[in-house]
Length: 338
Ligand SMILES: NC(=O)c1ccc[n+]([C@@H]2O[C@H](COP(=O)([O-])OP(=O)(O)OC[C@H]3O[C@@H](n4cnc5c(N)ncnc54)[C@H](OP(=O)(O)O)[C@@H]3O)[C@@H](O)[C@H]2O)c1
Image (cartoon, rainbow, N blue to C red; front, top):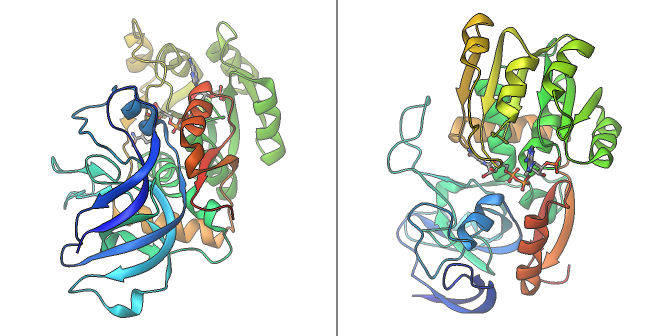
């Protein structure tokens, strides 16, 4: 039976997301319905709203992050799941190769209907027990950013406690998670940001220091002042990449998970081979990454940082806020005034 739910629907490119009653298709075998309590925005949702994403299908209900309670199960799923508080793993159809995702890989929330709705239908193996010490909003803030940060820092970057780690654009959701994980690991963490206040906030979390990415030659300055990094985790791209090549130690690793500032106009190839730099791409994560990330977060009692919460009905405002870059941490949508 199909289900009518309140959802924040994108009807076309650049349309203002608005809440409407939406018919979800019926659950297939081995699926569950989650009554969403909280969902979180990622930059991906804004790219889709702006039509800047591959293969966009409308109408779209975006939202890759969600926490809620299982309200119904389809054939093949134990009814004991009903009523459980769960967090949703947003990587769909990763495939069998732990090194990279399959061609069928998708992220929850377009083309599948995502979490910016009162209900979301997912395969039963996408729901995990929500860490009990986290609120619904904190749980919702974790999955996509936490998973991306975990794979970039730990699986690909192989961070260890004796490493010096630079995290770029610390105001970002993924960057903040990466900083929290690196700090919990015992690594020495440095950050870049467009805002001195965000650098100060990172220092309060435990970061050793930071530098404004608006400063010319910030990569060289970092190399001079603190001797370079073993690992740089970057979601910025653009000219940051050349600064990273200056700031990385010989033999160090630059992990790239995003390109908010686009592609650099030129790349200092000489730095790459002379410094024997490892450059690794990273996208989301597989089921191992997700389970390891959840276990680490629970072990260290890490709480995702929430910049601001909005009600689902204020979704358009939440999109604008994320786009403005004013946030430090995750932007969360609550389904009811909780
Ligand atoms: N590969 C994947 O699986 C994956 C997963 C998630 C995200 N991503 C990508 O990673 C990027 C970050 O995602 P997010 O959701 O964490 O985004 P976000 O929360 O919107 O944060 C983006 C951050 O980037 C920094 N930034 C913006 N313009 C910059 C510039 N010109 N130079 C340097 N830094 C700049 C800002 O840091 P400050 O506020 O500190 O200035 C901003 O807070 C996006 O491009 C996203 O598409 C990829």
